[in-house]
Length: 281
Image (cartoon, rainbow, N blue to C red; front, side, top):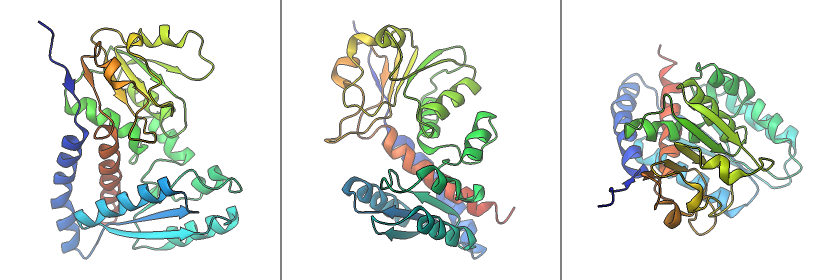
């Protein structure tokens, strides 16, 4: 008899996170504070526009104010940083999210660095990264935080496990590797230069796919009983994992959509509320 597969339902986790925020938002409102997230979109990329709209809608449903700043695609780095600084100086804005990627002429890292650490609710600054490395971040990068939250929600042990992370981006692969390491996992971070990648992945008790390539992780790469977390999202609602193939060996797996994505947005809202709460502490 085959063991039943555990589908790691991100919608369920996100709903629980949002439920915990309702009372906090109400208590803030009694003090005259409305949590506010400002999202910045540069240009007209359809996917980015969709993501910004989804985040704004999620804010609205919870009673979080959402400010949308839409800049033209020919915006310069200087102009973008000026817009960010206006939001930094606005006491009614508690969180700032710069939707990425930005147009090629912009120095994305310089723009990220312009965001105040107290409003860096998406965990994109180097200071935020450093705080996360030491386990001290108020606002760790949202997708890595979502991944760990899902594992905890389903009582999946991290300590002592071998976690294999495929991807090394500064806002996903690297920070989630550090978060798992801080939770006493043994972590291998793989990337495009890793030799015999499939053999390395087969060692993983927990496999995190964050490579940005549709159906990249194959079923025979997964060790029987491994936990598979798909942090990818590609055109057509396709993740970085070949779900149908990988579920054969995996004991638990996140779907795409309805896996990591909803928890990432819920984490962003949680961070925004926390940033507002810090005003009253």
